Length: 310
Image 1: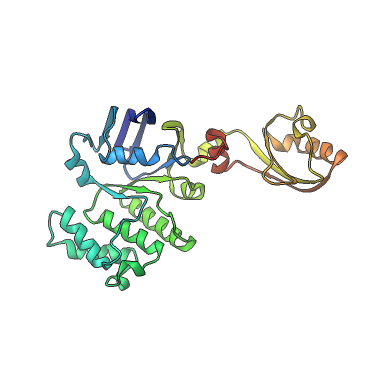
Image 2: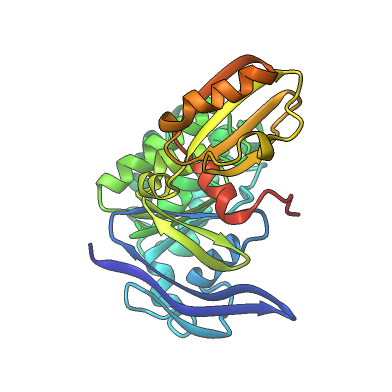
């Protein structure tokens, strides 16, 4: 793939807080690339650096060969941005919102009308084109925001929390639109902390924590690379000392998702499962047991920890 966005040792600080620390990555054409991380990890800061809305302190950024800090006009012609907050005008119709955007960003207004109709039909909003946006659902507003970002036909779309506040049906509709646009050669950079979204959408993703890239690969490779199986079991009564009970069985981590339940990370669970059950049954009543491969949730928690971030 041709590289369309590259970051090399990028640093951005807010006072003493290092929001982005020596971040390097490359994003290819026609790719849906995910920025995955906890709240406050620096995902939105990365998007704002790529668009040129923020200035970096050091490092290099190139968007289709242009520097967003010194060649902002060239970069903004090639990118579309859907911010985390759906900043549409609620007292205007969808048509008026898009015409307002066209007047600001489209060089040729003679063709804007046809483009607006094309996008509203694509986003399944044409029949509601004259309704005020305050009557739209959250999913409809997000689809309109995507249509607005596409109005000047950019090559790269940056989507911050694509389905924030969107119901299940609306989420899948947005995902399908993004996949269709990808098949047409568009590149997406998606910021999310939704594991289902990251797994369903992203060709590759980077896990960012405290502004650093700590893992980068396809979702499938990241899960496989964890090298662990997950055993979830329920007992009566609660296991008092699971680390001691399972000593010698290659247990990597033990957590208690809720009372009576244990979540055990171990290598080659099938090899040890008989011994797990035997030790449990000698002292406890085993109510439920399940073996599963790691998910993106497991990968995410492994790399970022379990502490709540605010």
